[in-house]
Length: 638
Image 1 (cartoon, rainbow, N blue to C red):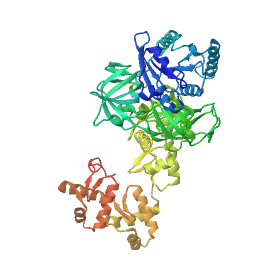
Image 2: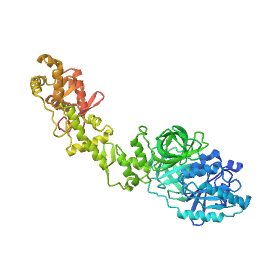
Image 3: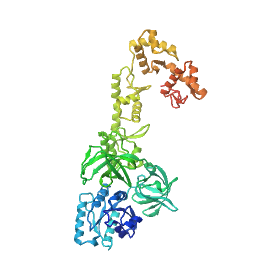
Image 4: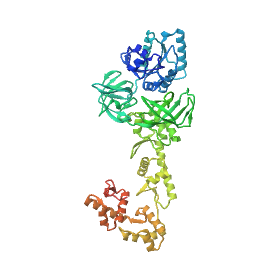
């Protein structure tokens, strides 16, 4: 168990820990000289059950609340300290508010310095504390009057801490390891040491970790868990790690950094949260207010963007996006505390919903629906609500990182389906995925009705026409499924319904019969539209319309505007490219020009056309046949 103190300055937190543990704890020289706690102090003691309990002593001065938050993050039980002579003070209230915002739900209260006051005063302050706790989640926490000088009440408080330790559930270590660094120092003969609270997972000597947000790899040379040398440490323990890394120096590690399993690496500057403004605030909080964000031991400045209105009233709840001035590590469920721009007042806090919030469309109803789904506690609870609102599905790799849940520990809902795209797997709600597939049929039908002279759209045009909200990889996966099922067919690049055909009218058939001999006679140098129009005495627009229609039917290839090649001539040119590569190893424009007997410009136009068809790939002034193309596999060009 890890216990953290909280309370106003000079209420006896440090003295109480010494009375409980018999240890002074880690103290700086300036702290001993000034008689106040400035930074975090640490102590470990066996309270009587044979195991070590870790204690974190936090500063009570208002100027060092940022240090207090760093120490309070990750504790199991709060020990709220209130002096009998002063009673409840400003930092008592602020520290309590921070603890509640951090989601800490176990607390004991030490009513200190009872040796300085009369019994009536002790009862008066006890009533103040009861009233302070009553509105919040820590109402009913036990209060122990104690004197650290005389030792009165210390044994009872120690026993209460033991009882709390017995009731605290062990933190799950099924996730990847993550530790919030609150100290880093150098030890002679050992090197760099970083300490902090393990939030999740397990770590062993020899493991490789990432120092976040730098993204630097380090190796664990040795470790201590709960102040004892060990080969392994796990979530819920205070851990000291002896680190090794290339040119690693203690100056490169700061409070607020994280040590993470490599799978969790990935810092962000934008997170979506559910936010609560403290009821004690005097005025509403405005959209885009500058704030200090505290998460773990991190303290980062940024702004809060309200997603549901321009104001939030005291005590109100809202979804919000934090846009930060420095990179941050977070996962779903992490607790955050927000303080004002001058870091003098706690505004409120909440819970991380999405550590990788989108930069656009954050106010849209679809996005707000996703955030409402993410309000659940576990991945199994959230997925059935999240998938139906995920327009482009959910990346399971992203979920692993977002929830710190390795894929092998998941239990997918029965109505989930995993789809493979060219950019990896996506999870979809089965009914939604089937709806998307069915949407292609009426969309193609409408296209055929609107464009009867076209065989069909290509892939990108159909996506824009039918399902523009889908990302291209998702749409291609959907289309490939429809092609495999036969509900959609492809003729070259054109997509159409199985029974759709583009047919030439009698007038177009007659004109084709006059044009075709001219195109075949030209072979590698067919006539331009203007030349055929002049020879046949027909308008250019009429000829151009027919040739483009024949190209959509796959009978012609349009190389450039108003220049069309027959399929026979195109295949002959493709065979020529294969011959050139077999002989020379590469295709050069000059070689191709000499083989076809045409000028340099026409040769380059043809080569660029083959590039667009995906048959060749250019490397500087040379080309090669694409290994996965129809040419390489000896199938039809298209």
